[in-house]
Length: 46
Ligand SMILES: [Zn+2]
Image 1 (cartoon, rainbow, N blue to C red):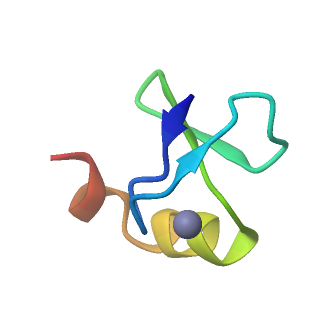
Image 2 (tube, protein in one colour):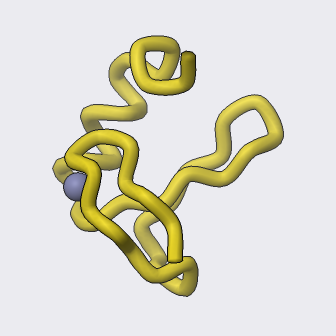
């Protein structure tokens, strides 16, 4: 399991909703959360 850094939900790592940032993969519960991350990745990766 991975943690959706936007909303804190647990998500399965086989989800299609993911993004790579600085060599790390982030998983999301929904496209909404992914879009939020893509808008401002720095805010969520510190
Ligand atoms: Zn989420």
